[in-house]
Length: 404
Ligand code: ASP
Ligand code: MG
Image (cartoon, rainbow, N blue to C red; front, top):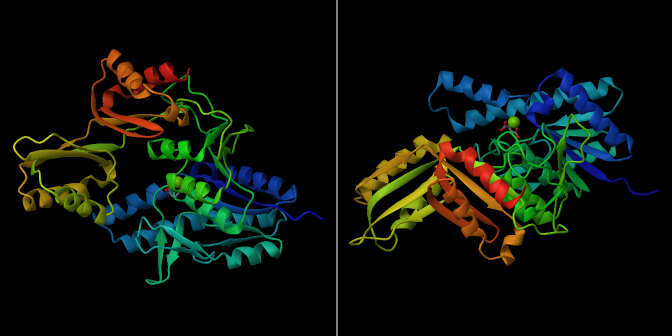
């Protein structure tokens, strides 16, 4: 007999929003099991319940303790995992649900943003070998030193799923969501956006880190590191979805256009232009767990310079706290916050061997009277920060220029 293959299936919040959708999900799981596979399932919290839990905490405290937030938020996925297991049992399928810590998902100790360090997976393997469909709560783990429950950051169930697939030697990881897969642009903004059939880890990583919300970037990193094929597809249709894999047949110059309008721009004015200043400043930001994205340091006049960067809007108050402290410590002239920004990016592996792609992007934006305030590039991405009100126009014109 052939050895059974193992498949990890992850279901996002909208796929498990209520008991009706849990029944659809159960059918997906059963179909996979009935094909002779071992199945490990990673559910998210139901619908927007994570947001609701966050709101409840904020009704009671403006700065809830990160430890208690993790205790609270990890409950979301526990509800889904047990309901799903109860339902599978009632349909005659053996199933067991496990929390992250029961599954041996060992993480760093940082609450709210823990990183998966190791997956022991004993109870998952035991569960599978006694014929169960094993359901593992997404988004959570356990730190050995602090002996605390942790969560992995928003959207973290994707990371749980792909990391589990890697640790268990799964054949693939299927990410079920409410859209048909990964698109060449956000279909809610660009009408012509098309489904991408196949995309490389590198491109997907750039797409995910530059605004494509469909996969969490860290999950793509795991996929790339352990070469786990990831398939992103809809729970509710029978579309083939998007395969994220190592090498694709053809390297498009631009595979996708993304945007991120959940970042704001900060500028620190009049900082001394001396060695060590940027290190000190960005060191302070990173110690506080702030995800600094684009950075621009202006040309200095009289040994004084301005430094601009973008960071997620939900970290605004933390950044502000550090900015006001650092600007005093460094004797800076002051700081400024611009909330009306958005970042648009073009991503494509074919860019590496094609010149003039960046200037084509700038020209396209220019022709549409869109001003660029910051630029950053990687070998397969060009990003521009623009005024937020121009986002749709920018995306449509870039999509037209490079893709449709
Ligand atoms: N429930 C968590 C969130 O909403 C994790 C996830 O959905 O992946 O961020
Ligand atoms: Mg969610």
